[in-house]
Picture 1 (tube, rainbow, N blue to C red):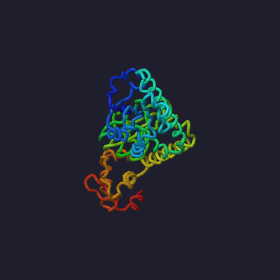
Picture 2 (cartoon, helix red, strand yellow):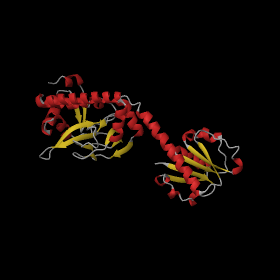
Picture 3 (tube, rainbow, N blue to C red):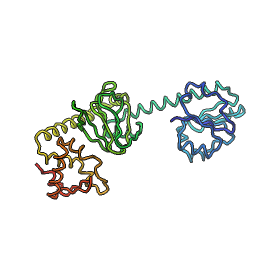
Picture 4 (cartoon, rainbow, N blue to C red):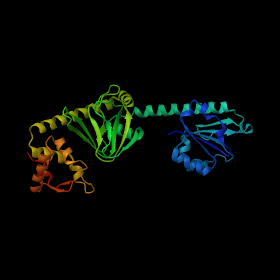
Amino acid sequence: MKYVVFFSEKDFSSFKIDQSAVLKDWHYAYINSLKILRNFIIEKKPELIIWKHTTKISSELFNNTPELYNTQLLSIISEESLETWQPIHSKHHYLPDSFSTVELLSKIDALLCLNNEEIIESEKAQRGLISNIETLKNYIKEKGEELTWDKNKMIFRENRHSSFIYLLNSGLVKTSRMDQLGKELITGIYRNNELLGLYGFQKDPICPETATTLEATKMYRILYKDFKEILQENPGLSLDLAQHLTDTVSRLKSQLLEMAYASVLKKTSNIILQFADDLQNPDFQGLKISRTDLASIAGISPESFIRSLSCLKKEGIISIKGKNINILNSEKLQHIT
């Protein structure tokens, strides 16, 4: 949300703000207290402050709120002060107090457009420094839209257009497809710091699967349009992403071979090993995935999966308490055939 602040003892509301081509899409606030202004700057980070107040702008204000150095500042000054007026920083401008409404709105439009141009140039420069996937993830966290979902909420649906790429910050998400008989087939489980939605690079690609939260989840997302621009500006990222997708395909091929030829016990152990890092964390609260979903990932029936868990428990390889599974002997689990 973008703000313009009017700092004055008098009420600025008499100005017809809706006549401004720029301000019609902005929020604006009228403030007459220096303390309130300081708090507002810290919390809301306004794009422009219009200063028509008898309180002079002091260095103390800047020391306490350094955000002001990056904020457009428009001082309304008297005609007598024009010759002695000095800007405090490069974004400090002035307007004589004999201004008309048209002059004020024109100045506001110019400063906000200037600020938008600076932001665009800054974002372009920042996008040009994204050389690998980890840097891309940091960019999505910083610039992306933050979203939260409760458990069992759909993020996107199979066979629908997708306009976003997502990065999980916390929570758990499953992707799935429906077969011709209406049975759900789970295609993947996504956790913290994983990208979701890489389904192509054309405009608005079609989602081949449905994404659903398995627990309360927080994510960030950016538009595919922005993602394509980032790729075009960063050849190194394109190569890193190509390697990431190649590794993903290779891993999926291995999983398909295991699903086709491995024993039921081996499939069950592989699923548990996918969550080994979480399961062996003393602060882990237990898997939030149902036995049915785990069985679907392994490519076996829920009954076979539960029997395999019981077998592994009897051999002392895992322990089971309610929905929680704990690994007792990871070496034996890895060498099950």
